[in-house]
Amino acid sequence: MKILTVLTYYRPHTSGLTIYAERLARAFAKRGHQVTVMTTQFDPSLPREETIDGVKVTRVPVAARVSKGVIAPTIGLVATKLVAQNDVVQMHLPQFDAPGVALRGRLFGKPAVLTYHCDLLLPPGLFNRVVNTVVDLMNNTAGILSNHIVTYTKDYADNSPYLSRYASKLTPILPPVELPDPLPGAVEAFAKAHYIKERHPVIGMAARFAAEKGIEVLLDALPMILKKYPKAQVLFAGTYQNVMGEQAYSDRLMPRIHEYEAAGHWTFLGNLEPVQMAAFYSNLDVLTVPSLNSTEAFGLVQIEAMMNSVPCVPSALPGVRQPVMMHGMGRVAKIGDSADLAESILEVLNEPQKFRGDVESIKKSYNPDSIAQEYEKLFKRLMG
Image 1: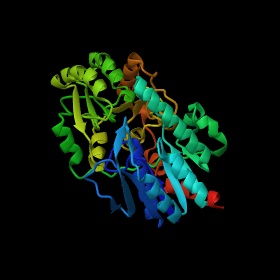
Image 2: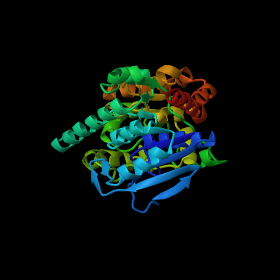
Image 3: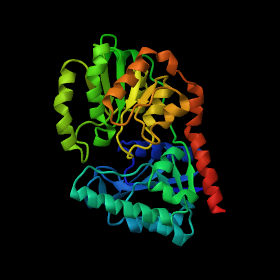
């Protein structure tokens, strides 16, 4: 099968969406499919074409940026060529160019499938309201033109204004999640580098430094946690500097974070490679995902943590609450409630034995090969 995957940002850009797309594309390729990724050349230093892990990546030049999106004038020409060459088109939303790609799928008789990752909710402001309106219009047009839509969970679909409109052509498929084993000695070396024995327990957070991630909720919860555990520390993995569209948010929170850094209660790790993430998770006592709105639909990092026997404390957002509810490894906290987040984290730290799960079963459920098979069944059904 020839599969065309379309999304705005692909690797080396790091986000839950790009990691999902990369894992799925790689799994398709391993299963013998011919996979092409059409994306944007968001960094001019990236090659226009290359093959990564058996996946051909075609990048379209970017002329301008609008908020977190990009304008690529030649994307229509490239899409016409690639849609015609492939058997099925899979698009990752939110994406401004999805309607044009879905329309080409219709014109060429190629099934067009949307993978809907999350609702887009930009920070307040007139310009962002305009951008949100335009993206909503484009997403709805793509939804109408597509043959089918995939989302992570029924819970998120039932609570998403967008997805609830397309219930008749919607299939929940769990996301692909995999993580390599840490290198020999890496867990111990990580612990030594970050003073794990002296600064304990360890609370992990893995995310971009962005307003929707609820970082301030964890900041507000820390005094309550430190009252019980005076040596506790937060390890923050992910991009935390120069995050697109998040400078004002960073400027507001960083003075407080720097105080915790100076006291040894907060450490920024930056972006970590998958093998480094394995060492990161293995040194955590709990992972938290205190996200605030529906731009977070699941929280893939929760599954990565659970695969390393680490319990989680997410917020009660639709979809985000599902990993803990499905697998029993943690507690769900009220959205935006720092006191409840602190209480939930403390319960997990106080009684870790209550939150152990079936790690092998979790690994099997999210194995990229298994997820690729679910997509294959859907593709074959749509191809008739």
